[in-house]
Image (cartoon, rainbow, N blue to C red; front, top):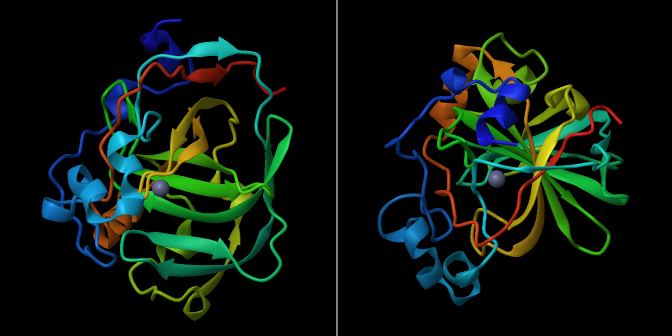
Length: 259
Ligand SMILES: [Zn+2]
């Protein structure tokens, strides 16, 4: 399948993608690394020995999604449930995490992962045919063996999104402590309804850039209003790591619809 048909098939038109470049992040250097200047992405590995993978890794994220191979993979099995969420600002992004007993899970390739947190990057970290979406959110999930699986969701301009509004309303006032800002979030409703993903093996996109992360980028973006997206950009803009070399990795498309 060519790159064009891959995205056309799932409704990602180049016209809805925005290239946002040159934005700078408001808060930076909170933990020794940043997204610009002498502590920016090209210097991460020299900041701390534990960040070496950021420079010498062979399976790094994010990547430019330009082509994929169709595979009869089973769709992600989301078992996300609503609950109390704590919102906090870690100096590089704003996150929301379940508070109390967390029972949200996602099953990928017959392996269960517990949902840990969701955060965002603006513009998107993954590119689609070289273009960025305005925002990309990452749902981070962890298996009992410690391995990580991240679900990436693109945000495009469109209708206002009520399910995300409790998070958005607190983004600019959240402190570093999740216990300070509690809201109710229905995690499942923060996802697109189409479960199709592009999958590849990658890394964390922040130092130390650890590899062995299962990436699942959903092909259908969710919509938000201009005002909602503006709030994300007011919180952080330019907190995206540049795309990394593929080094022969193959991106898989779980093209078997709604199994
Ligand atoms: Zn992320």
